[in-house]
Image (cartoon, rainbow, N blue to C red):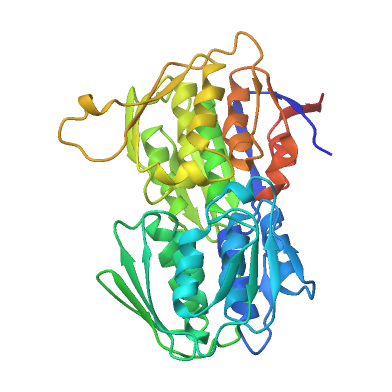
Length: 419
C-alpha cells in the first residue's frame, strides 16, 4: 500500500558510507543475455530494483500473460525476446505503461518477420506476441531519436537470429551511452559487432556463459551528489562504483565539480567531498542527451542552490514513467522555482528545445511533493529536505530502482516519518 513521508535533515553536515544496489540498466541487460545463453551463469550484486526483480521473474515464467507493471526497460526487452522465440504470449503492463509508445520497436520486429498484434490501442501495450514467421530477416532500420531501449532490445537478440542483425539507425541518436553499455555487455559474453557510421552489424553467433558482477547504479549515486551540493559540507563514500563505468550517468561526477564536489575514485567505491564555504555556480548549462535520467537530479541541485540553469537534450523525458518535464515544472513551483521552455524567438541560430530554470527554493512552508508514479521524482526532490522539512506522496515508488533509498537517507541522519 502506498504511503507518504515527512523528511527532515538532522544536520547539514553529511558524513557516512552508503552501499548502493546494482545498476538496474546493467542487470536487465545481463538477465536477458542469460535467457539467450545456452549455459547458465551466476549474476553477483544483482539489482534489488522492482524492474530487475520483475525482469527475472518474467523471463523464467511459464505463464501465458506476462505483466511488466511500470518497468519500461523490462517491457521493451521482453517484446524483442518473445518475438524471436517460438510460442505465444500476451505482454501487458500498468495503466501508465499502456500510454508509453512501443510502436517503433514493434514495427522493426514486424519488418524482421515477427508476429505481433496490438490488443488495445495501435502503437501501445498490451501486445499479443506469437512465433516468428519462418526465418527472421537480418536488416532493419529504426529511428535513433526516440528511445535507445528499442535499439538495445534488437541488438541483444541479434546474435541469436539465423543471419544475425544489421541495424540501421536513422536520424539523431539519443542516450548513446546506453547503447554502448549494451554492446560492451554483449562483448563480455563473447559477442562481436561492428559499428560504422549509423549501422551496427551483429553476426549470428553464440553467447558464452560467464559469471558477472553488476556494478552499482550511478543514477542512484547522483542523488548523493545532489545532497552534497545542498549540504554545508559533505564527506560521503559510495560503495560499488567504478571510474571506468559502463553507465553514462557517471557524468554526475563531472557535473558535481561545478558545484564544488570533489570525487576520489577508490577500489570499487568513490569518495565525495565538499568543503565548508564552497559556493555553487550562478549559472549552469548542460545537454542531457546522453544522460536523461540525471536531469531531474540536476534540476533540484540548481533549485536548491539558486543556480540559474539552461538545459537541452530533454526530449526523451516526455515518455518516461511520467512526463518528467511537466511534473518537475509543477513540483518546483511549490517552492517558487520556475522551469520553462525557452521560446524559439530567443534561440537565434541554436537547434533543439531549451529549458530555463530560475529561482531559489523557498521552504518557509512545508511543500507536499507528488511523485506521479515516478521513482526519480521522489529521489530527485528528497535532497531538498536539507533546506527544510518536506512531504513526499507515494514515497514507496522508489522501489522501482532503489528500494533502500529512504533507509539509506536515515543512515546519514535524516529523520523520516510516515504520515
